Image 1: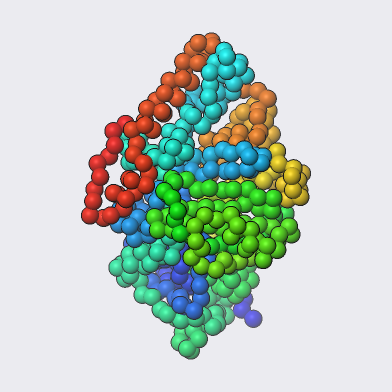
Image 2: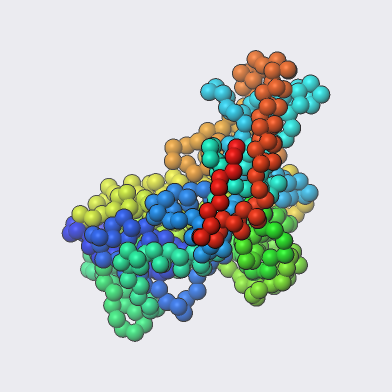
Length: 512
């Protein structure tokens, strides 16, 4: 038996082996080779026999940062992946049956240094529409209004905050081209055995054909199997299914039957929720559900009953356990993507977590040798980040007015992490929100979702009460007018994508 308490490797890291391809593997390979390719020998092992999950096709704005680091041409990327733009997520039936709201990527209104915009909007709402016209909270957000009105463009000043809907399989191919251009060597083969040194470090990957791929450092991108970190190094898994009851998904692709809208649709059902993600050439559909309340065959039938357009494949079911490995980096292995943990795709965070995993590794790469302090810091940051995201996703299930099905009744009555309970109580009591250091979702995201899910604060900051009715009405009205004017100048999203996604064309930015 290997001694997992043996001293860590102190020799320089020169040879890196990435186990597994897909989105995680090729995102890791592309960035690592761009940044450190001249100093490292990087090899990626994947097998054409093993399929990838590849159903998550919606992203969040942080992907633009990753593309900037890679020097990606956005038009070429969009053409290669048949991508469309995304300005947010429309949550349908989450607050209650027949009630919808949007979580957008933009900022809403204008803050005061003492109080966020929500305090001024709440003050006007309490004074009544007759005294102070205030509109919907989302009327004060450019990205939200542009999204629901199906418009988009790159603006020259104070541009829209956006992300993408993309074809995940094509994205992996696109990234592979970048990685191989920086010298990454792809090795075809199925991993049959993981070999270890006496110290417990991973020594090599033994393939089905008997060949061995040895390395100094390994990146585990083997998906739910977590072949290196979980199975070989024995890192345990923390199960969060008592907070996140959905443990299954069924996915299918369909033909496009209308214009692609610049937002993801998340449609609540009695037993879970359905996604609808429009690409240029097709639509991605899926049903995330709790197997406690719905069987696999029923889930397939339900999804097919709620799609638009002809199905392009047979629905396939995926099983998962929401949660996180106790460690993400152990000895000479870092797990990226599903190998490290999984949160359902409700807020499109899967690709973001891959991105953060690899960028964080680049920031503390053990070129001169592996040190426990780096491992501990990496694991601490990973845990802090994913727990903030976990809480944000749990919020959607906990704060709801739905009581029409066992799933929603159970979620409304469940105990939640103390960190989330504190946020809910603070917003309910005072309309205050906060962003923890390095947290993904900002204050406006929390406000949009908490208000959208039906949580109305009982008080607001006194700064808002210093404005008289006329002043407050003018303040809010001018924001709504400015948003409406900007939206009217934007072209239709589908028209813009058609002109922009072809690499040979360069449309002019639309004036604000």
